[in-house]
Image (cartoon, rainbow, N blue to C red; front, side):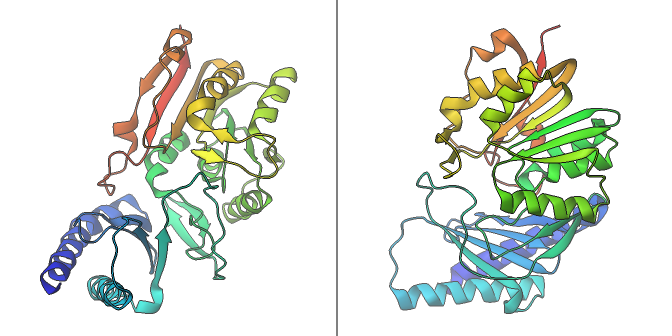
Length: 316
């Protein structure tokens, strides 16, 4: 066992050395330190300011309880040693294999929200309360891209979660935006993110709605947007939805409907993190589609399949 923990600690040390300069230069406080680099240590380790989000992936291995506890304790010790952070700053999550449950499950643990900065924006995060932290780090590059082209544009954020794309768009000079999610919890979180970044909520509206309904109504109201982001969960069976969302099955109608709202020279970013996802080939007959997945995955992510992302426009 000891040989392995040394390999793990060495890899952490190498990664931190390699990434620290980049983190400072990029002006980010939340980043991925380790991504299952050593097979015997199936974790994703993210740094959020002075806190560590440690996710253990369910590999289906069987270990005796005592052996498992020892292994985990060694892992936490190695992380503390390399990062210089106390064990109380290391937040462990066990990720079960997804069984079609919602991605935003509560863990039942209470903990404090705190703020991290990214490219001059500020976000509330919480490392214990939910499966996810409030900020998806793998979308950092796409957020920056959206912020850099948002000036003067009308922005729409669908399946908005805590509204981070909207924060980038608004601070990047979007003239208006609509941020749509079905969860009150996440819209409240988005509202707090807006307040943190001094975003005017008259111009930038938070809308609680089922995205399918929203798209139909927006079309009837002839709404139009220059920039749209749609990052649906892989599956969702929220009690508030009439239907179960299945991104593989539903993406064609979601994209086609969103494109109805997109201005002539506008752009839609569509992404999701379902490993087996395949974009329907029929879509490219109706729209101009460019796969930007490679470019959209930040350099701190070793896992190049963390998400897929497309830039979709109207045919000229």
